[in-house]
Length: 298
Image (cartoon, rainbow, N blue to C red; front, side):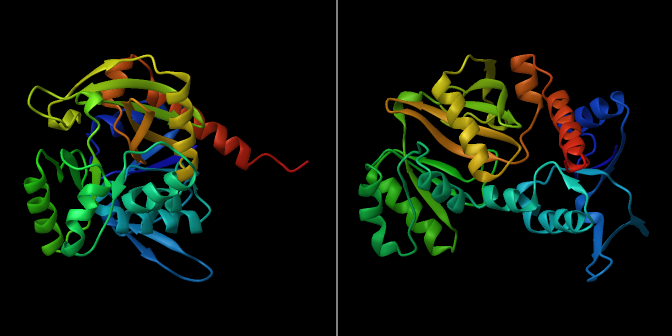
């Protein structure tokens, strides 16, 4: 296959691994800076241009679209889809999962375990919002945040009121969530590929920190997940419509709770912790998806 990878960071571990594995399996690969792609949106001949040339003849595209460029990145991916290029994850699924509020509502609708989550627009409703999620301590999350940025643990009622009011008054959209004390600053990242968990790791926050993100200094180790956790991760990815996803889960007294479903999960931490060839599983799935696309109807 001729594969395009949309990535702003060609030297990023995840991008390099996907390139390495795809080429080792005999595919041609080109890494394209997502923001350097520009589009001709024509009714009968849509096209994408890059550095003065028209892009064509790609069999598949792997989107590695960062959260900060979701709008433009999904527009580029839609253009590839309009040109009948097969996408590893669809533009619709990526947009769905990146809207954290919409994603929470969809997961809730399908009965997936979640932390109690509140959302409000007016500062007048803050006291009741805090009560609704079980009071302090609680977690406040920017809807646009990523890698633990814009996530605040509020230990007291007063602190929670101040932080929430400050975010709302500065026109930031936030979620307010219950704090799952029994998780002890740890979560589980499950890598789901084609409806199966192919690798999992436990991420532990460093002392004095509640965010377990590796970018925030958290540590990772391999973990054996329960059948319920496995089923939750698979179902969460399915609800988002993602064939490849990183599903973050908290272990709670009432069972697994989904924190987030990531459409462009990093591979470095989970490959190192689990010892699994996740990049290989992704390229194998891409090959399978291509074979299904070109299989003649019976």
